[in-house]
Length: 348
Image (tube, rainbow, N blue to C red):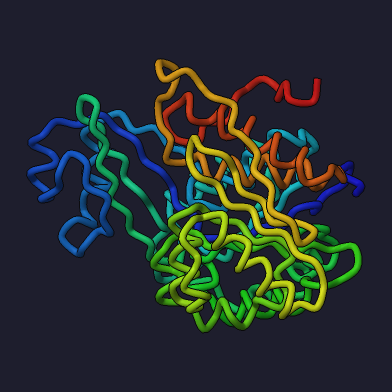
């Protein structure tokens, strides 16, 4: 693949502006939050974002699973606008910050700007060694078919060699996800990659996932997600291990596609399980010293970013996995997905 151009990887997801601040317990109590909660903001809690900005020193990071992945891939590739990100944000100051942060890192941003809904935000409220997450999706879940089909936007899809869609995006914009799969999957010179994203996606969006199954070239997920997928697909009852489930899912995908597919399932610090060329293989993770680990929440997103970056360069699947492990290992050594200022040393 020719990585020395724009739009090698085009991604669709739910963009969120991560707003990190060290707060006191009184602030958490004010908004009825626990020190380690991970919740979606209710109407009462929607006021905490401006309150945090006015009260504490806030650090902004472009977030959301797909955006994390594409930022990591962009860092590894190092070619300006080699990656492109689609999503929906609001016409507000938080949307401006979100777009600016991604563009500073070299990503080509093609956001839809919603006229009424606010930009998606996730407050990361730190107390001691605790971290409370409070997300407000708003515009992030409102991406429209109208924006996707505008000629200047669709041209990015035409040019792309890799289309990456998260389960979160498919759940919130199913018609767009299906169109992307149909127009990209099983096409010569293109790869359609899909991430299961979360166990609840497999439960709530199973019909949508089944619709795009025949078009998936590479399926990503973790062990909890693929087990949820297996349950919803009602595969054979003798699937007792992650490896057996991955094999069954890979066989099903190949049957529906009528051609080979790839399934990549991470298991935290345990080996990554790969189904490829109708065979199952495991790849050990390179251990990061426990004292160096700061935050593992974005490890899966970073892994996919590393994998896709190598895939864009024409590498074989084992090398893509090795780069995924490298990227995840780098990112878990900081709070959230923070892109290093220095170039990636994986290529040297």
